[in-house]
Length: 91
Image (cartoon, rainbow, N blue to C red; front, side, top):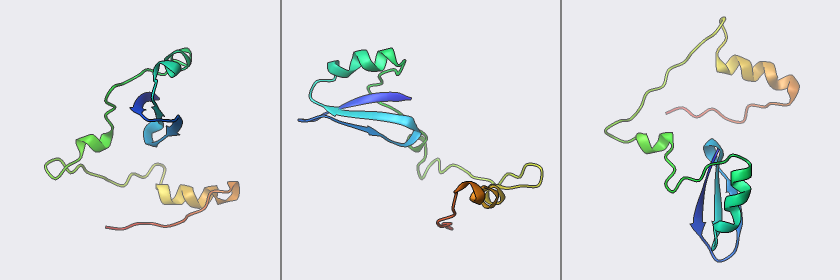
């Protein structure tokens, strides 16, 4: 997990994709000690996988099966534990 600060008149904490915590505050110093105690480093500019995907570098995806099971099989098996399948998006 990493954290970043965005100037803001009040204070809000948002945990987003990839466990990135964004703190919207006018004074990031208030949170530096707390985040340091939890070993969460501060990054001025956080880079995620989406920063590497573009028309020039579109990325790739592939389906992987292990022991004859793909991700869709696992979703079906985990229904008994409360997991449900909402939707599959095809391009």
